[in-house]
Image (tube, rainbow, N blue to C red; front, side, top):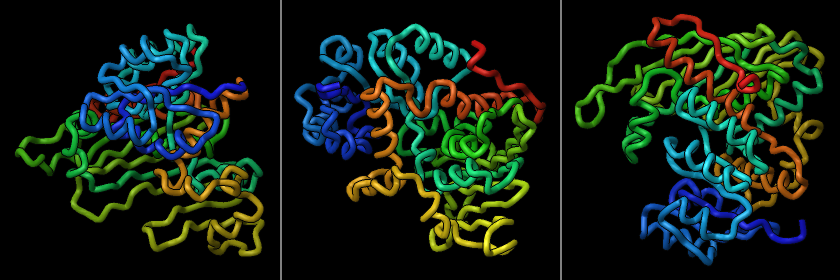
Length: 368
C-alpha cells in the first residue's frame, strides 16, 4: 500500500484512547473519524487523534466517513453488532475483547467474517506482553519439552472498578462463571500451540458479597474452571474480582516434561523458570536470563513511546500488528477463530456452573 490507512475509532473517548499513541505515531495510519456517545469526551478524542470528523452514531460514521478500517473499543454488548456492520461494509476490523456475549453471537460473527473481504482481529493485548511472548518462544524451541499443564488466575479485587460503568457491572459480575477469560486464556493458548480447549467444568465458592446498593452479585466470589484440550492438556483457571484482598492481577504457571514457569506473585518479584537442560539444573532462574536468546524482535525494536501504552506496550503491538496485516495483505495475528478460542470456554463455563459443574463441550468455531 502507498496511501495511509484511514481509520475510524468508536468508543474513542474511553477505551479507544488507549490506542492514541500507536494510531498517531504510525505513519501508515491516519485517523479519519472518531465516534463516541459522550459529546464532551468526543471533543477531547477528536483533538487527541487529530481526526477531521467526529460522530455520535456509529452507523452514521460507517456510511459517511471515508474509511478503510475501524477500531471497536466499545462495551461488550456492541462488539458483534458493530463488527458485523463494519465487515458488511467491507472494512477491516480490530475489535476489543471478548469476542462475543453468546454462542449465537459467535456464530453471527463467523458468518460475517466469512462473507466479508475485510479482515477481523481481536485486540487481545495480553498475548503481546513481553514475558508471555518470551515464554511462547521457549515453548516453540522445545525448552519445556512436552507441555501438558497450565494454571492461570485473574485475582484483581476490582469490585469498585466494575461500578465505574454499567456495562462492567452487567457483564463481569452480573453473570456467573468465567466472565472475562481472554486475558488469561489468550497467552496460555499460545503456550499450547496447535491446540484448543475442548471441554470445561466450572464451580464457584458461593456468594459472600453484595454491591454498593446492597444487591447480590450473580457472580460467585471465586469461580474455578477446569479445562481439557483436544490434545489432553489440563488447564485450571481461577477468576476472583470480588474478594477483599490485595489485587494480584494475572498469574500463570506452565509445566512441561523438561521444565516449568511461574509468573511473579507480585510487582516486586521476578518471573521464574526452571529448565532441565539449563545451567541452573532444577533450580530457579529469572525469566529475564533468557531474553538475550529468546526475546522476540518486536520487543527489541519497540519504540520508547510504546511503553506508555497499556500492558507496557501490549496495546501498541496489538495495533501495529493489525496494521502490518493490512499493509502486507496477510491474515491478522489473532483471527476470529483464535479470538473465539479465548472467549467460548468462558461462555460455556457459565452453563457448566449453572449445571453444578457438569463437563460441557466447547464448540470449535472452525466447524461453523
